[in-house]
Length: 154
Image (tube, rainbow, N blue to C red; front, side):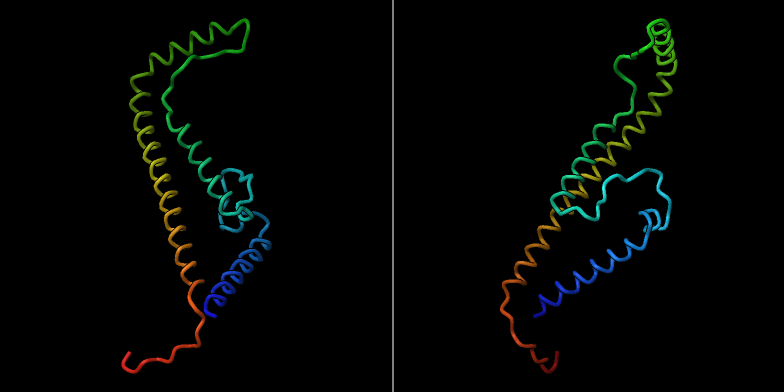
């Protein structure tokens, strides 16, 4: 009985949230602030497995882009001025390397810490979700009994 009540309440909350989302023109209105980027995916419609996959993909993208130190070859697609442009870029990179390396190393450290923090959040969320499912399973397995009478002295 109580389990059905909990499920009904959760469904009502989902419907209220859905109705609130439908009233808003976009997610910027929903959160009450403008966004500085476009959100392509409608996260509200995703299943738990799709959300897990999306979180993992985003975390992987963050990890791949965490290193902001310049490296690798400097390309140029210009046929005539390409070599001169590449030479100038390499010269600027060498001249500014000590300063940019110091600044970007701090940024790299911050980026790595943020990616690690997000990974821990992701893992903690999965752990809590598993615990919640176990509790829900225990609730489902409980026999339905009439309301218990209050015991005196409690």
